[in-house]
Length: 169
Image (cartoon, rainbow, N blue to C red; front, side):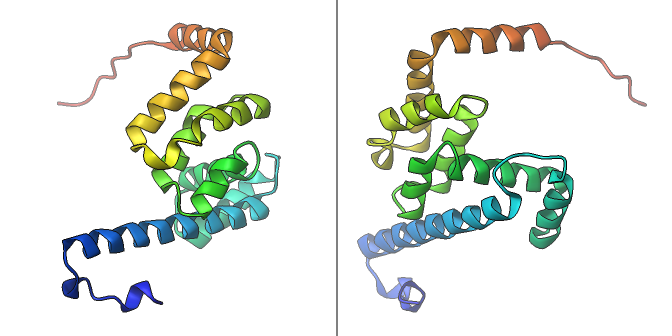
C-alpha cells in the first residue's frame, strides 16, 4: 500500500530508481509466496497423480499444462533442494530471474550438491547481475562435481542430431 501511494512523477531520478528497486523486491516476495503455495498444492514428490495437479494449477493460473508443470518443478526445487534461494527470494534479496537461473542449473543434481552450490554462490548473489550469477553457479557446480558434468556432457552429445522435416512450399 505504501509503494502504491508513491507517485513516481513527484520523485527525482534517484527516487524513481529506489521505487523501481522496492517494487522489484516486492515482486520477489510475491513470487516466493506463490511458489510456496504451489509446492504445498503439488506435494513434495512427483507422482502419477501429478497430471490432475498440473491441470488444476494450469486452470487456476490460465497456463498451458507444460507451463504449469514448469511452475511445479520450480516450486518443488525452491521448497526442497534450494531453500536458501527461496529465503533470499522471499526477502527480496534475489530476483525471480536469479531464482530461475539456479533452479535451471541445479535441476537433476542431488539435494546435497544443490546445498553445496547454494552455500558457495548465495553470499554474493544479491550483488550480482543474473548473467554473472549464472556463471558463478555453473563454475561452482563444475568444481564440485566435475565427473557428473562430464557425464551430462557425454549424454547430451550422444543425443544430438539434426533432422530435416519437409514442409510444403
